[in-house]
Image 1 (cartoon, rainbow, N blue to C red):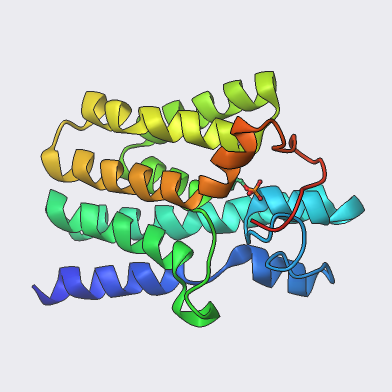
Image 2 (image 1 turned 90 degrees about the horizontal axis):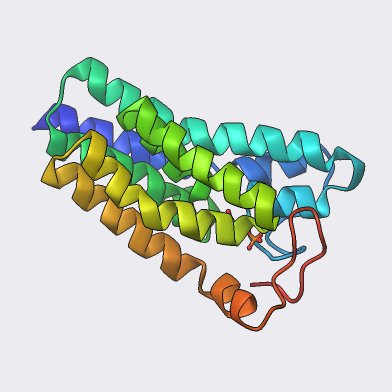
Length: 204
Ligand code: G3P
């Protein structure tokens, strides 16, 4: 029992390291929690980053994805069962949303969920990321791309890894991710959600 517990705690602590806040601080950009949408995530870093935005957002995306990917790879290496694999993925995701290092006020979890999916089984991550990119290319709205790809993610996990613990993990991640996007859903419904790289309305 001790090994999975250590893995889960480590995953949560790693998830709690907010790439957006650290990258913005290091690159001399405004705090993403108080600018743009107020969300510490790659989309908002791109939004508020000016000419450094693309680079800062790419590093944020990579950092937040690695937080999900690394615990899953460690779980595979340690040979833990599906319930510990699922718990590690969930812990990394929850660390990003409720970071112990940042007053439990974190991001919306898209990049970290993608990392978890790549780490679970890379074709799962590839499918979800592919859907995200496809929708983002067509509609140019980050939140909508996230909502559509993450809504489909439980089916993708079910297709490649039909184990109840793993499908359950993805259902919980998708459910919480939708809840965290409730301000985005409101903006999508009233047509005020901004397009990728565009300006945001009031913090949400
Ligand atoms: O990953 C977060 C994204 O889906 C929405 O971010 O800043 O537009 O609320 P934001």
